[in-house]
Image (cartoon, one colour):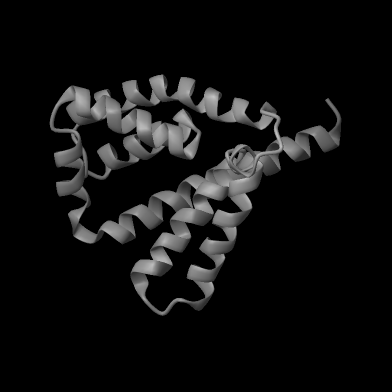
Length: 157
């Protein structure tokens, strides 16, 4: 392994960790004090917890990020361990959905809809929306949405 390979690895890891932190912070700030109530409602049964974990992992394309966020929520007292188990199981199932999403990069076709499904097409659009919300919005809610979008883009990069 060359020096530049290690440098690329460390840089990619730094972007991944920063994207997770930005997305988690944005979600926490957007929900305000309602995060605990929202997570309680979304994970009221194990099945709904699994579905939540699957959906979050499919969206952010990282079961590791989902697991790290859930562990952080448990450590901060926002979630209980019983709730976290279902979400983490869903995150592991969601890895399969993530693989399917990533396989869309190999889809070929000239259709606009097919090209829009590729992460290389929708990530720059989400980054643009996130930057606009972060830089030009005076409302805290839109600023938090911009933070979430930028975290998501960093995770998919």
